[in-house]
Length: 107
Image (cartoon, rainbow, N blue to C red; front, side, top):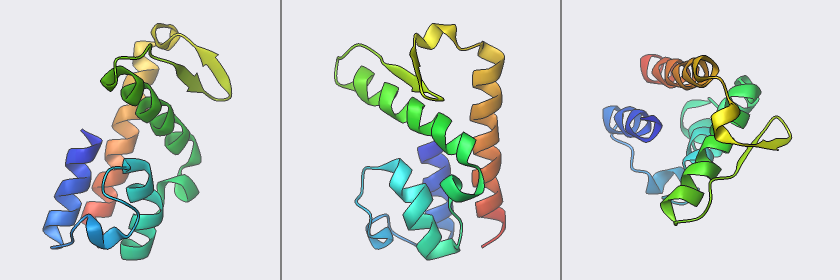
């Protein structure tokens, strides 16, 4: 969902992922250094707790995608992803989408 929002932002402004100059596959770099260069926006600087949550999700996704056990490291603690309350997970995911929509709405 976050990658789709990133793509929507880039497409609307006719910007390629390559032009972010941070690699083509690392979403975390796209929404920090890449967006800062192109839009003056950086999730890590603006909403660090959301960035840390996204970083935990990105790492867990990477493990799952490569057939490894999911490791959830968030707020400096390693735990089972199942221990995160669903409402907190939903709130954080929605908050990141809201931030990305703000980037989209304000070029």
